[in-house]
Picture 1 (cartoon, one colour):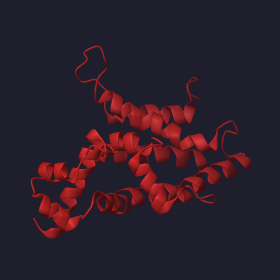
Picture 2: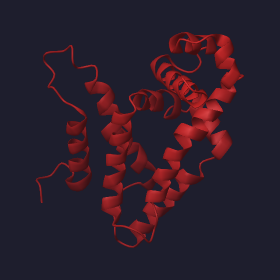
Picture 3: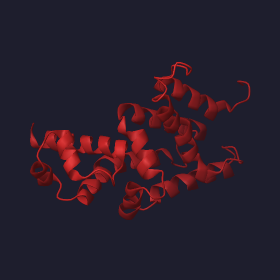
Amino acid sequence: MSGPEQRNRLLDTALALFAKQGIVDTPLSAIAREAGVTPAMLHYYFKTRDQLLDVLIDERIQPRRIAVSEMFKMDEGEPVTVITRLAEKMMQTATEHPWFPSLWMREVFSDNGVLRQRIIKRYGKLHHQGAIDCIAHWQAEGRLNPDIEPALVFISILGLTIMPLIAVSSWHTDPSRPTLGASDVARHAVALLSNGVGPKR
Protein backbone atom coordinates (compact mmCIF):
# COMPACT_ATOMS: atom_id res chain seq x y z
CA MET A 1 0.00 0.00 0.00
CA SER A 2 1.00 3.59 -0.54
CA GLY A 3 1.42 5.87 2.45
CA PRO A 4 -2.03 7.48 2.15
CA GLU A 5 -3.69 4.09 1.61
CA GLN A 6 -2.00 2.63 4.67
CA ARG A 7 -2.97 5.65 6.73
CA ASN A 8 -6.61 5.41 5.63
CA ARG A 9 -6.64 1.71 6.41
CA LEU A 10 -5.41 2.42 9.93
CA LEU A 11 -8.12 5.06 10.39
CA ASP A 12 -10.80 2.65 9.15
CA THR A 13 -9.52 -0.07 11.47
CA ALA A 14 -9.51 2.31 14.43
CA LEU A 15 -13.08 3.41 13.74
CA ALA A 16 -14.27 -0.20 13.50
CA LEU A 17 -12.60 -1.20 16.77
CA PHE A 18 -13.71 1.94 18.60
CA ALA A 19 -17.29 1.23 17.52
CA LYS A 20 -17.04 -2.42 18.59
CA GLN A 21 -15.34 -2.17 21.96
CA GLY A 22 -15.01 1.51 22.85
CA ILE A 23 -12.12 3.95 22.73
CA VAL A 24 -10.96 3.41 26.30
CA ASP A 25 -10.68 -0.35 25.79
CA THR A 26 -8.85 -0.13 22.46
CA PRO A 27 -5.07 0.36 22.77
CA LEU A 28 -3.00 1.33 19.76
CA SER A 29 -1.44 -2.13 19.77
CA ALA A 30 -4.87 -3.67 19.13
CA ILE A 31 -5.40 -1.37 16.15
CA ALA A 32 -2.00 -2.31 14.73
CA ARG A 33 -2.70 -6.02 15.20
CA GLU A 34 -6.13 -5.79 13.55
CA ALA A 35 -4.70 -3.82 10.62
CA GLY A 36 -1.87 -6.32 10.18
CA VAL A 37 0.96 -3.86 10.79
CA THR A 38 3.60 -3.49 13.45
CA PRO A 39 3.10 -1.05 16.36
CA ALA A 40 6.08 0.86 14.99
CA MET A 41 4.27 1.35 11.69
CA LEU A 42 1.18 2.66 13.50
CA HIS A 43 3.33 5.04 15.57
CA TYR A 44 4.88 6.33 12.35
CA TYR A 45 1.47 7.79 11.44
CA PHE A 46 0.00 8.42 14.90
CA LYS A 47 2.28 8.99 17.86
CA THR A 48 -0.47 8.77 20.48
CA ARG A 49 -4.10 7.75 20.74
CA ASP A 50 -5.02 11.41 21.28
CA GLN A 51 -3.38 12.31 17.97
CA LEU A 52 -5.28 9.48 16.28
CA LEU A 53 -8.55 10.73 17.77
CA ASP A 54 -7.87 14.27 16.58
CA VAL A 55 -7.24 13.04 13.03
CA LEU A 56 -10.44 10.96 13.10
CA ILE A 57 -12.40 13.99 14.26
CA ASP A 58 -10.85 16.35 11.72
CA GLU A 59 -11.10 14.02 8.71
CA ARG A 60 -14.08 11.73 9.39
CA ILE A 61 -16.38 13.36 11.97
CA GLN A 62 -16.14 17.13 11.54
CA PRO A 63 -16.86 17.16 7.78
CA ARG A 64 -20.14 15.35 8.51
CA ARG A 65 -21.02 17.83 11.27
CA ILE A 66 -20.41 20.70 8.85
CA ALA A 67 -22.54 19.03 6.16
CA VAL A 68 -25.43 18.71 8.63
CA SER A 69 -25.12 22.31 9.83
CA GLU A 70 -25.15 23.60 6.25
CA MET A 71 -28.57 22.00 5.77
CA PHE A 72 -29.99 24.39 8.35
CA LYS A 73 -30.04 27.79 6.74
CA MET A 74 -32.95 30.04 7.60
CA ASP A 75 -33.41 31.38 4.09
CA GLU A 76 -32.97 28.14 2.13
CA GLY A 77 -35.30 25.19 1.62
CA GLU A 78 -38.62 24.06 3.00
CA PRO A 79 -38.14 23.17 6.70
CA VAL A 80 -39.99 19.84 6.54
CA THR A 81 -37.93 18.86 3.49
CA VAL A 82 -34.69 19.86 5.23
CA ILE A 83 -35.46 17.74 8.29
CA THR A 84 -36.55 14.80 6.14
CA ARG A 85 -33.34 15.04 4.12
CA LEU A 86 -31.36 15.08 7.37
CA ALA A 87 -32.94 11.75 8.33
CA GLU A 88 -32.10 10.35 4.90
CA LYS A 89 -28.52 11.65 5.21
CA MET A 90 -28.13 9.94 8.57
CA MET A 91 -29.34 6.68 7.05
CA GLN A 92 -26.97 7.03 4.11
CA THR A 93 -24.02 7.65 6.41
CA ALA A 94 -24.93 4.71 8.63
CA THR A 95 -25.29 2.29 5.73
CA GLU A 96 -22.13 3.42 3.92
CA HIS A 97 -20.07 3.38 7.15
CA PRO A 98 -21.03 0.42 9.40
CA TRP A 99 -18.98 1.86 12.26
CA PHE A 100 -21.14 4.99 12.47
CA PRO A 101 -24.22 3.83 14.48
CA SER A 102 -22.37 2.05 17.29
CA LEU A 103 -19.58 4.61 17.52
CA TRP A 104 -22.03 7.51 17.61
CA MET A 105 -24.19 5.94 20.31
CA ARG A 106 -21.21 4.80 22.39
CA GLU A 107 -18.80 7.69 22.07
CA VAL A 108 -20.74 10.78 20.94
CA PHE A 109 -24.33 10.47 22.09
CA SER A 110 -23.25 9.63 25.65
CA ASP A 111 -22.28 12.57 27.87
CA ASN A 112 -19.23 10.62 29.04
CA GLY A 113 -18.15 9.57 25.57
CA VAL A 114 -14.46 10.18 24.92
CA LEU A 115 -15.10 11.28 21.34
CA ARG A 116 -17.86 13.68 22.38
CA GLN A 117 -15.61 15.38 24.91
CA ARG A 118 -12.79 15.73 22.41
CA ILE A 119 -15.09 17.06 19.66
CA ILE A 120 -16.43 19.75 22.00
CA LYS A 121 -12.91 20.62 23.12
CA ARG A 122 -11.72 21.08 19.53
CA TYR A 123 -14.81 22.54 17.84
CA GLY A 124 -17.36 23.40 20.52
CA LYS A 125 -21.14 23.18 19.99
CA LEU A 126 -21.46 25.97 17.43
CA HIS A 127 -22.91 23.83 14.63
CA HIS A 128 -25.45 22.20 16.96
CA GLN A 129 -26.62 25.54 18.33
CA GLY A 130 -26.99 26.97 14.84
CA ALA A 131 -29.41 24.18 13.88
CA ILE A 132 -31.45 24.73 17.05
CA ASP A 133 -31.68 28.47 16.37
CA CYS A 134 -32.75 27.80 12.77
CA ILE A 135 -35.53 25.43 13.84
CA ALA A 136 -36.79 27.98 16.39
CA HIS A 137 -36.76 30.65 13.67
CA TRP A 138 -38.82 28.45 11.35
CA GLN A 139 -41.31 27.90 14.16
CA ALA A 140 -41.63 31.63 14.75
CA GLU A 141 -42.41 32.04 11.04
CA GLY A 142 -45.13 29.39 11.28
CA ARG A 143 -43.27 26.98 9.00
CA LEU A 144 -42.86 24.19 11.56
CA ASN A 145 -45.01 22.66 14.26
CA PRO A 146 -44.74 25.04 17.27
CA ASP A 147 -44.96 22.10 19.71
CA ILE A 148 -41.65 20.65 18.48
CA GLU A 149 -38.76 21.20 20.88
CA PRO A 150 -35.84 22.48 18.76
CA ALA A 151 -33.20 20.95 21.03
CA LEU A 152 -34.76 17.49 20.60
CA VAL A 153 -35.06 17.40 16.80
CA PHE A 154 -31.60 15.99 16.11
CA ILE A 155 -31.89 13.49 18.97
CA SER A 156 -35.29 12.41 17.66
CA ILE A 157 -33.87 11.81 14.18
CA LEU A 158 -31.06 9.75 15.69
CA GLY A 159 -33.69 7.75 17.54
CA LEU A 160 -35.62 7.10 14.32
CA THR A 161 -32.59 6.09 12.27
CA ILE A 162 -29.51 5.01 14.18
CA MET A 163 -31.13 3.10 17.03
CA PRO A 164 -33.37 0.98 14.75
CA LEU A 165 -30.35 0.13 12.61
CA ILE A 166 -28.52 -1.13 15.69
CA ALA A 167 -31.59 -3.14 16.71
CA VAL A 168 -32.29 -4.80 13.36
CA SER A 169 -28.65 -5.85 13.03
CA SER A 170 -29.15 -8.13 16.04
CA TRP A 171 -32.45 -9.60 14.82
CA HIS A 172 -31.04 -11.89 12.14
CA THR A 173 -30.75 -14.77 14.63
CA ASP A 174 -34.30 -14.31 15.99
CA PRO A 175 -36.93 -15.98 13.75
CA SER A 176 -39.76 -14.12 15.51
CA ARG A 177 -38.45 -10.75 14.32
CA PRO A 178 -39.30 -9.36 10.88
CA THR A 179 -36.58 -9.14 8.26
CA LEU A 180 -35.83 -5.44 7.97
CA GLY A 181 -33.07 -3.54 6.26
CA ALA A 182 -31.78 0.01 6.01
CA SER A 183 -34.37 0.95 3.37
CA ASP A 184 -37.18 -0.16 5.72
CA VAL A 185 -35.77 1.93 8.56
CA ALA A 186 -35.46 4.96 6.26
CA ARG A 187 -39.04 4.57 4.99
CA HIS A 188 -40.33 4.26 8.56
CA ALA A 189 -38.39 7.32 9.76
CA VAL A 190 -39.52 9.52 6.86
CA ALA A 191 -43.15 8.41 7.32
CA LEU A 192 -43.10 9.37 10.99
CA LEU A 193 -41.41 12.68 10.31
CA SER A 194 -43.81 13.58 7.51
CA ASN A 195 -47.14 12.29 8.80
CA GLY A 196 -46.73 11.24 12.43
CA VAL A 197 -48.73 8.20 13.54
CA GLY A 198 -52.12 9.41 12.28
CA PRO A 199 -53.69 8.22 9.00
CA LYS A 200 -51.89 9.37 5.88
CA ARG A 201 -53.05 12.77 4.71
